Length: 283
Ligand SMILES: O=C(O)CCC(=O)C(=O)O
Image (cartoon, rainbow, N blue to C red):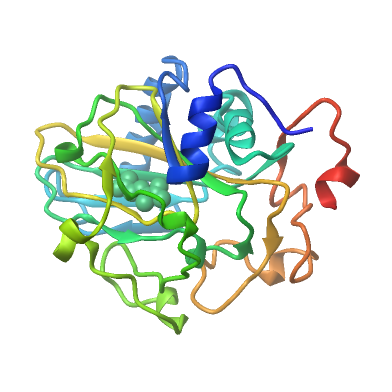
C-alpha cells in the first residue's frame, strides 16, 4: 500500500507528479527551527568534513554548505526520525516507504552574490529511481529574492541526466562525470517554465531528484538557513558512478549495483506503511 499523509492532499500529490515540486505549508513544527539554527551556527564555527564554502569566515556574501551530518549531529539525527518529513516524502513519491540518504545544510549569508547554480540532484547521487526526493526547509521566511528555490516545472519528466557542478565553483569529484552539461537556465529564463516559492518558517519544498532547480543569491539582510534532507522510495536502486558524491561509496556497503539500497546502517528505513513488508519494498 502506498503511504498517505493528512498534509498530502490529492491535489498536492497530483501537482508533485506533474510539476516535480510542491510546497507543503507547516510541514515541520516550529520547535525544530531554533534547533536547526543552533546546529547551523555550530557548523559555521566548527565545520564538518563535507563542506563547500565560497567565502570562509565572512558574515556577508557567503554560501556555506555542509552535508552528511546525521550520524554525528544529534539534532539532525532526531530531525530525520522525528520531524515527519520522511512520511510526507513517501506519500508524495507514491511509495510505501522512505529511506534516508543524507542531510544538506545550506546557508546563505546576507548579500550573497553567488546563486545556487541550476542543477538536477540525481546525477550527484549514487542512485537511480523515480521515487527519490528532497525536503527543503528554511528556518525563516524567505522570498525568492532572498534565495528561496526556483524550479523548471515538469523538468523531472524530461528524461535528462545533466552533469553535476560544484556549488562553490571548485574542481573536484564532480569533474569525473562525463556527460551533457546542465542548460544555462539563468541566461534564458524566458525559455523555461520557472516556478519559485516564497516560504514561511517550517514550510517544506518537496521536489523530485530529477527536477531542475536553483536559487538566486541572497539579496536580503538576513541569513538564510535551509536544511534539505534526501529520501529514497521503493524504486530506488544503487548506482555509484564517476562524478557522484563521495560521502557514501561502493566501499561502504554490500549493496550491489542495481539493487534496492536496503542497508540499514547507511540508508535507514525511516517510514513504511503499517502493512508494507520489507519484501514488498524490495520487490
Ligand atoms: O538551498 C539552496 O540554495 C539549494 C538547495 C538545493 O539545491 C537542494 O536542496 O537540492
